[in-house]
Image 1: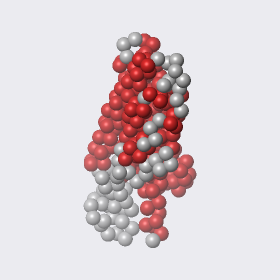
Image 2: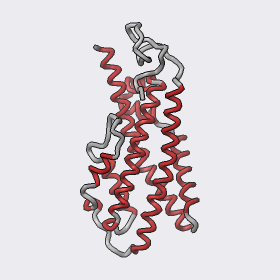
Image 3: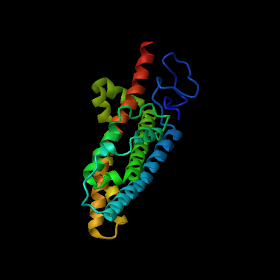
Image 4: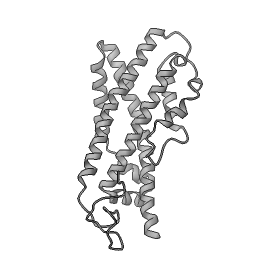
Length: 237
């Protein structure tokens, strides 16, 4: 994907061309390829919204069929082999993943808090985990694309504020609110009855707001930290 390239017209600190481009030279216009890459990832993220809404809707249907009077099972007991399967579904080109299982733990907890009979829904939980990790992995690609478009923003952000600075540089509340609104609207359109529509919309938007968006941003920061650290290491070498 050429994450360390901004433009073929740039030169590095030694004033030599670095193949097809560089990251240490002049400020150059964004490459069309980088812009297209970012747009393509965003389109994929929107498609995943539909997949996740369908997954949550299926869980609600399964819950309704099995009844809600049974005792909830411990989320930790569901599918001990899930973790490996989910991690294997992550884009292997991403420089970071979920080595501590933090994302998985959050998804399991959210699942247990919102649904009954989770012990009977191992397949549903597995699918929700896979979709979640795919969404988060795509989010790290957004960070990569943004870095390619203008790495100076993130170099300065890390210099001035460390991880908090990188998080602030990534955060766009207007975009986040737009995503949440779109997810709610899609969920409401999927369900016919008002009660079911409201619950599906509430669950999906809550999952994005409390799990997907924060987890994505956390891993995006790790991606950017690696990229900026590589620049710092080059400057001191």
